Image (cartoon, one colour):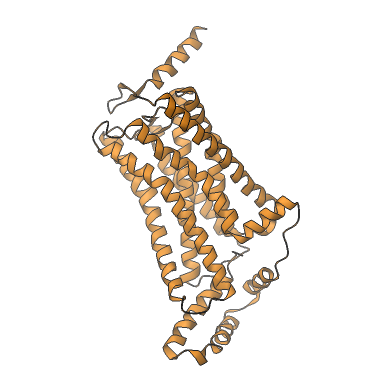
Length: 381
């Protein structure tokens, strides 16, 4: 009985305080009861919808083998990390907002911060890998091999190792995970300005947010430039398919950054700004936005990717995926057509346009045709 009372007392003291740069406890202002209620509603919706949508994506992968392509495995990796956030992160924040305080003590706070940081970085790194794959396929004329899963698994395992490399240090003394000022979430100790803590935060910001963001901007910037040059040419089915795919990925990246960028900026202001500059109410908004990314990604998969959408409709109707002759045809081409034969296809496609285009335009169009055919052989349908 005495041990239980001591544990309850430790949890209460942890809820009423946080640590400054010297490790001493400071009082937490906390949130009002009304704010706690609003946060609980938001987190409850995110918990239910995020779990439902990501579970649905996993079910689609299990149910339909046509969707289990190497590149789609990276999308699956994002969905798995989002679902893990819904399992190991959001429920504890929801419970804390309902009860008005953190419930699982300092050790629970430490592992909560570690898990959420780990899964969030995995998603961001996976998105940057996806953007680089599109860059290689579209601009470097690299053919996507629909039967080679080794490269996809290397990327997936690499994303987890990279994330572990940056999220394990706080468990061993380089910075630490602690309760945020809102009192219902835990993360890196942003409010400490010690050299040990600031050095970790700077590295985390540069290598886990800025670097992946730079890769995405670089890759998609070049892809968009190529697609804009194609606008004056009539779009073929393959080009339209590529533009739909590009819209899906850009929308996914944009939503992710809109969810996580406010959290990163507020965290930096908390670290380098004046003490008390970020109130608990202000700090909880970016945290909710960050968790909402687990809801948006699966929605983008289903409604902006025709392959996922067909599988989703078939799942609801308890039917097999409708046979797509066009997809089957392009799949055969990707395996059977040799480089010499591809060049003949490019020349044939170009011939029908020569009557309408001068020599310079034809040369430009030939380059675009080559890019389009390469994209058409990718494993995206």
